[in-house]
Image (tube, rainbow, N blue to C red; front, side):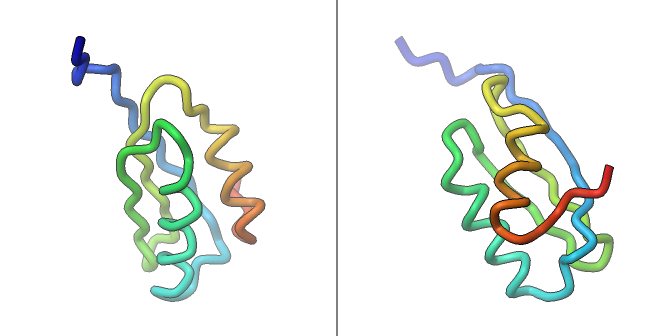
Amino acid sequence: MNNSNESNQTTTVTAPEIVCGGCASSIKKALGNVAGVSEVDVDVATKNVTVNHDENVSREKIADVLDRAGYSVAS
């Protein structure tokens, strides 16, 4: 069975340490390795990280992965 209609969710967080494209690449790589994450977009200008994911990925999980990559999430 192929259930391509899993409930995809979008979570946006702000990470003040994002200053350049290198930061964006690091974040995309870190979050891209998380099971359930389908897409990661990083806006360097606004310091926002938008993550498309399934219901098994929580905001806390996203924040934890970013924190381990060196980017704390603003609350």
